[in-house]
Length: 125
Picture 1: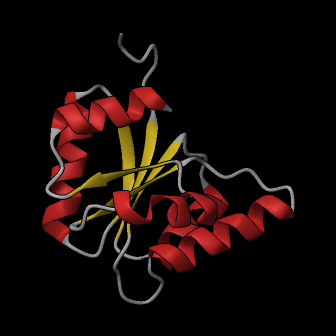
Picture 2: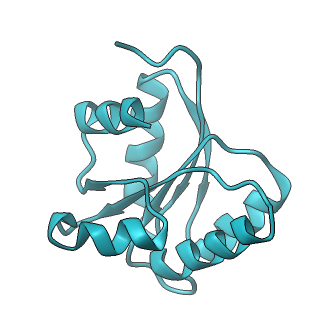
């Protein structure tokens, strides 16, 4: 089963190589998006532009993944629209998944990203 429309994805990661990889994989899957190198920039972008989904690195300077999730949760409680969030980490988040889900994440991927795992995560949402 394939996604029926192109998604607009906000990719947030402090590693420029990971940003380029995610952007390339999304393009290969027929999606587009924007790149942010920390959570605060991503939150600012969400104020101005609509996104269908967010790929969010867990460990970043300035505003990390958990702080960004908390800010998104606060936006939701104020009635502001927020996209679903897929956390991205170099560590497998399965052992603490309930913690991250309760924090507001909709899914997670382990770095390095691969196209099949990304496509499966997008289909689940």
